[in-house]
Structure formats: structure tokens, C-alpha cells
Length: 413
Ligand SMILES: [Zn+2]
Ligand SMILES: [Zn+2]
Picture 1: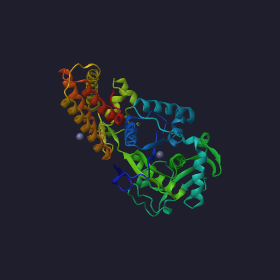
Picture 2: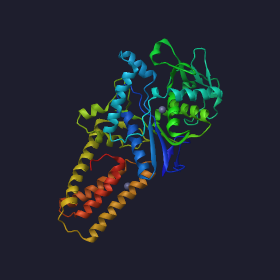
Picture 3: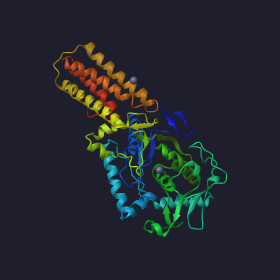
Picture 4: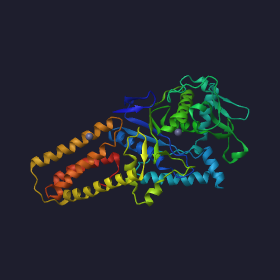
């Protein structure tokens, strides 16, 4: 199996240390319903996890929920509610929608606010080793000049005289010492903890490494997220985790590219956003949405349009109606098939599975595979319509399609 490792920017043979795979995916910041661009990442992560499991690995999937972040606090203020109530509401919506989109449950969904103790311990290690410092306001920063590998993930060299950045997420041109912990201030006093490193709130870049190391250990196999996490979030996660533990942290970094909406970046402030609910209201099923989100390879940018959504929904529906016909034949066909015909069906089913494996082993080329399901099922449907499909052949075809669909999960079968 080969996959593209963002760390090093090349396709690599997947060579884990054993059958147990630690798999950490950055979850949503819960202050609004996630848009379908967020779900593109989660659906692809699900397919990759399913394929790893299908290939014999035992995957321990951890997906954090960021319930403690500037955006959550700000949005709660605006809505005159507490950050707890707001994040609980959208956390629930997220889990429900993710399930509807056919994603397997993670082993755990750790919430940032429930792991303050772990975060404080990581910050203490960094302070003790001299990688972090506290300023006059009680804010704690990571000193990027102390970590020579800083910038390696995102292929970037920070300038020598780096400044402090208090924003939690920012671009490379703003790069500098990043925030780990913010001393309590009046603005967000409702989200402060009294800890050994002072009274305050953890920052996003401290949250994920503390939680991933707690559940998966100081070294694990795969860390995934959206491509906009490469810098700053994941670059900063690496700095925090490696410097705190002295270990390698993550072996494979994988990132899902953006989803554009009608050619433009999705942005809430510009009203250029679609959420799952919008598509369900238009009559698309969650499975059809999943198929649409998987229709472009995860390392290519995808442009979402209603024309594409419509085309893929029609495609899925036609395959599903063919499946019904083949299923019927598998139960009650009276056609007496010859051995040669059965062998022919076995060959076709085998070819589809081989092509499936070949493509998935090559950096998860899932978009190609749906066509194989279709070809196979359409071939069987044609024969069934002419009353030339025997029970055995129909069963063989269905078995192959089921196996492929256990990874894609886009068909009702
Ligand atoms: Zn994260
Ligand atoms: Zn093929």
C-alpha cells in the first residue's frame, strides 16, 4: 500500500510497525454546523480508515472535538449563550450528520475542555525544557527558534526574528512564536481554569497534541486533517509533541484538499456555504452526498456544483435500481446457467476486486472504483433483464460489489 505523506511530500510505502494503527483526525470546532467542505475531509478519512481495516489492520481512531477555542467563545457571546451549551449543541449535530454520511464511529471523541490536565502537563514539559516561555500577561508561547525542524511539514523557513502570534490559526507570513496558553482575561473569564501553570485557557495548538498522545501514545501512525491544517495547526502540533516527548510523534501525515463551492472558497461571512441540511432539503440522500464528496480524489481540489451533485445522485440511483434487479435474480432466478457462465461471473467479480485493491493501494484512488461496481452490476442487470442471469452468477456479482461497498459505503445493497 502506498500513500502520500505530506511530511516529505512524496508517495511512500505504508510500512507501519505492526497491525495496530493509531489514527488521529482533527475534528470540528463546534460553533456552527460543519459545512460540506468539512465533511469532505471526514468522509475521506472514513474511507481510508475502512480500507486499512479491510486490509487487515486494527485501527484505533481518535477524533477530537474542539469545544474550546476563540471562535466558540466569540460565537457564544454573540448568541448570548455559554460556550458549553453552544459547543454541546453543535457537537451533537456533527455526530448525527457524520453518522448519516455513513462514517464509522471513532473509538473516542475527546473534548478539549475535558483534557485540561493533560494539556497543562505538556505545557509544563515545554517550559521545563526551555521550548516555551511565559510573558508578562501570563500567556505562554512556544519559541520556534528552539526547534530546528520547525517548518518541515509545510516546507517553509520562518524568518530569524520571529514575533509572537496570539491568533490560534494563521498563515505562514504571520509565523512566529505561537500561543500555547492564554492567561485569564476579563473577556473570556467563563473559560478559565486554575492550574499549575496559572489561571487561563489552553490554545488549539496545545489541545490536539495533548489528546492524541494521551490516547495513541507519543508515537503513532497516521494523522489526518484538511489541507488548511498543514500550516499553522499541524506544523505547531509537531513542534509541541516532539519537543515535549522527544519522540517521533506521527509517521504519516495526510491531508484532504479544499472543497470549493461554485469555484469559490466556502466562507460563512460571504454566505458562500452549503451545509448537509441544505442538500437533504433538496431531496438528495446523505449517501448520495457521500458519493459526491468521494467523486474527486482527496488530494485534488474539488469544485462542488449542483450539476455535479445531480449527476452523481442520478448515477447512484441507477446503480441501486440495477442492484435491486440483480438481488431478485440472486433469490429467484430460474435460469439454468452453465458452468462456463458461472466461471465467467467469477472472473468478472475477481477482476473488479483486483482493480479495487490495486487502486486503493495506490494512495486510495476511490473515485475510479465506483465505475467498476457500476460496470459489474450493469452487466448483471442486462443479463437479468433478458432472463439470462442465474442465481449463482447474481450472487457472485453481489458479493464483489458488497465487498467494495464496505469501503466506499455509497450504495444501498
Ligand atoms: Zn487538531
Ligand atoms: Zn479499473
